[in-house]
Length: 352
Image (cartoon, rainbow, N blue to C red; front, side):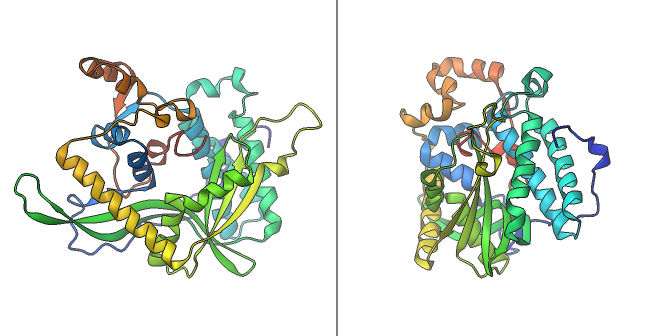
């Protein structure tokens, strides 16, 4: 797997992908609803101004980022490996099919400078992506995982919030819709799990994995699987994937140690708490919109994981920000209910 196989030899067109799974009543007007996903909720809770730049102004930094691009490519390879196995393909055939999709996604998602020959030794090079991808497939193959669903986009109706209009004072109802993509629903040792893939350049320690007990996205995916797919489970399974280049010394960690598994359980009361908290955040977002009042963090979120991509805008004088946007940023509108993983993913959100 060290050599990149031509994508034209590995295309698969007869493995179908699902449409968006949704439980939205016909009378809901999506243009007036509050539509959120895990990234938007985490962003607003961390820094309202960052949410404003992304969701209200549709501003993102120019160019492609290596960390999220690598995660996207890895997701794509594993997705199509799993789909091929579900379709009855032999292991080696499924491995090649997944590798082809990984290569294609890598070429589309990664910055051009990362695809130069001089970067072949980088931890996010294509060859290393293929090495880690193959290691992941080999690591989990003996587990006998049975996949019921793979990469399911969903739109989950959460209910309504009531909020008074600032202009009229009249209280009105707003529908709240939660969207996302479930990486997989799998069966292991006679138990069903909602599965989430997490790539990171941090060492995949037990402490790092424990953080997902309070993960907005993973808990929401579990609820969506129960409500929309009828999956009778309160369990989630995190697959942590360490992004590290191939070691040059014999004493380094073997490839099999790059992959860790964490089982998480949520009680009914915890799932209900997630629901309440999500509606509360949607309410706060709508208040900020009505008032056009967005608070800057002025704290650790400005510098976390190498620095927020909007820090230069917030640090600039207000009159210079439009010029800075023209130079270093571009407009990108987030389209709800569609798979725009690259746009929504960020270095901060993916712990890369």
